[in-house]
Length: 391
Image (cartoon, rainbow, N blue to C red):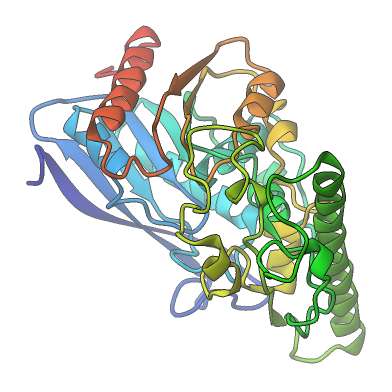
């Protein structure tokens, strides 16, 4: 027992044939996809509702939010995709299939009657993507052109969505963070100083002008598109060549260069200037843990491509029409840009949507137990009014 709840490991598996192995180890290599999760259940609070936390690549089971929900009496599943803690070969369409398998398990094996998706951070856009395809499936192929038919999976619909500290999508967020000063993907030192936020020789210093930001954003999109075209060309080359090589890995340098980190007047919220959620953005920009740092041709197109990825925040929000949605916005979020949540709010098709702002809250609620408590209170209040809590 921990903090009033029990933690139990859960493993599920299902058969899925693949053209080649894209995940390390057993999962996927023997015709089986194996998923692992943690079920957090309060000791003395039965419930027919399960709150499903899922992120494309993180496992979430030791983060404050799900543990606080379980401590508050909610039944929580922290569900991993087939790509736990490694998004280098991640295909978003396959993550949607994994989420569907977890919902099936929750209802058919664990006996829960209702499942609420809790999309924290990157899990928010995943939840909207999933629910949109569950309500009205359209996808039959990945952006790389590989057959992967979500219309034939009968993805089970969730009963509600909670969107917490979440951004538009991985592709859109990366594009707003990628360093447009890089001129040669093979040589990250070959840069346009006029667009380099961090080089002391650059004239790009805060506060940034409107003209600079316009040029900077356009250059970010242009860089993302150049990588996309290259990835498409490489895949076509491999297909024409034939043989055993069907995929190729590559590195994307410098992916943490958002002017918002340096200029608090841009899309203002309560974040601390000069920092991002991973620390000093100058170090993260060139470090090994940046978004999309290590990826593959197919994963780039599915997960990171500005034009090709099927996970687009506003487009998928517009497909969610049948379930209630609660948005919780942390107003000092140091990861999710302040502009992202209003876009989701305005795009959601459902008429049952609520928007809650928590002043001063950061992305992880680090050192902010009182603000995390406000978040949990908002979740419980919404749950009670929608018949979820202890249903």
